[in-house]
Image (cartoon, rainbow, N blue to C red):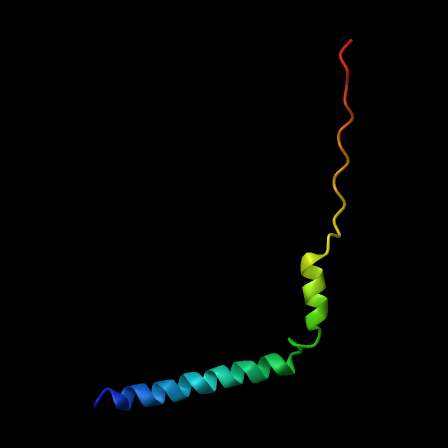
Length: 58
């Protein structure tokens, strides 16, 4: 039972730390554009490189 003296405050402190992190992420705008991030992840914006010209030996 002596371990409860350590574990209960530790659990409360970790919960408070998680809550502070969540509130900070809300304030900084992390959840503003959820659909845009999903589309950016699957969008194929890069153009494939042009193939090098083939040189024929004569």
